[in-house]
Image (cartoon, rainbow over all chains, first blue to last red; front, side, top):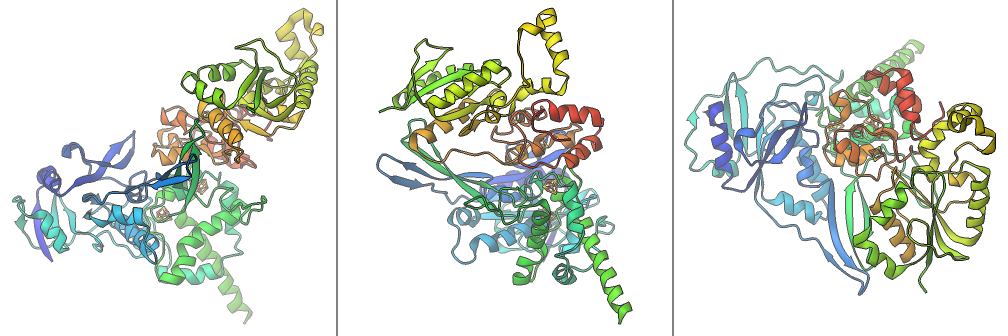
Length: 344
Length: 244
Ligand code: SF4
Ligand code: SF4
Ligand code: SF4
Ligand code: SF4
């Protein structure tokens, strides 16, 4: 892999250079203590040292709210929204975020591809950046290291005050054509970027833990504290559920159909015609949320469907921690195993 | 024939009615679909029967009870408009105090001249078919309901918490900014307008069905306010709903 060194002070020049390919989207400051992915207007405003953005990068490919079609009740006609295929560079992306896009690709593109998502995704390029894990990141526990480069075209690794830039794909190489601020370098291994939050087991062992956790007492304990706000799903980069609704103008003639992100933590998510609700209690919903991340899809795909970004925990008003729940399940499982052994 | 529509006000500030009068841009479109036959704020005409009756305000005296029964009898569809009508709204704070004290504070020596009842939602007296929430209700919500009634479609229903729209707008959560917000257990539909402008949600659209009160109080007290203050915040718009 080709490796170059890049001065911190030359990062804005790199961003400007990438602008020749298409719109550049990168992390920016937002509010008092937060960050969000925004289109770059001034490359000096891009923040490369950030913990996590409020909404995941998913928002660029599967927007929080999106118009699917306009329709007319006069002649019963409709016009689907055309999503143009535009080149875009996603700059300053953490490895777990990239992994979430790859998982989302699987959800949205396998079988019959979702055309809006496909069009937004088609000409996208990704430039990764390393990060220092905070008290919520746990991606290593789900098999994603800080320097995982799968999916990226280029990757920036922070080495003391400057960066090392790796060229990962031919597309990445093309992006750099004509950029002259790079100096060939030997890759340096960075030490000391440790994860503070850890799942006690290797993720390979989790499906087994979950297999026996369905009737665990842990679910009720979590449900007691959960206020059902849905923030955990709504900020999760691998959740893809949406709701569709129609809105008619005051003229009662024209209208539009929209879709918005939905959340399986909301009490109405599993409500069906006739008022029946097949996940009526918070307990059922919390359990379902975790099973979606560590059992149901994992059984099919062999990978955890959680990338360890820590958003669901960092943005939960009730401080409910994904890792703590899993470690509680593990502890309970160990206890059960122990009792079984003792009995034998 | 155009449906006959009427508006009535009970115990309220009439802010919801005024909000409708501000609909200038859409008013002509609305009048294409409905005929307004009673509207105290804007006209004097009266009719005997209504296709849709919109009710603003809470029920708080024996005469209110009589009047709402009468309106219900003459209306095909009855809609509660705004917090006061939907769940008693801020008026219902009076229910938290001994009724005699309340009367004395308001009417002084003349308190026996005015019969009073606890402030109640319209639905606690008569059947309510639809509701438009908020203090005041928003024009958009009112229009959406009216359009669906005219088209004979299912009325829009908001039963997700304020947090949903707040997250979709990518707001920084007020809990991360050292504030305390009622968004998690409050019914949305307002586009999270208060948190979007940096103001915490006070719960004006009423609470979700079966909210986790204890969990919510714990969240609020863990974020720096006293249990007393947390309860007061919860009661402000929802004295008739909160069961603590
Ligand atoms: S963010 Fe927390 S409180 Fe809200 S639904 Fe998720 S677990 Fe429950
Ligand atoms: S479940 Fe939580 S930690 Fe895992 S990807 Fe979703 S938001 Fe991130
Ligand atoms: S600011 Fe309030 S409404 Fe918005 S996410 Fe936070 S708690 Fe929910
Ligand atoms: S954010 Fe809360 S207080 Fe503000 S309008 Fe919405 S429901 Fe009412």
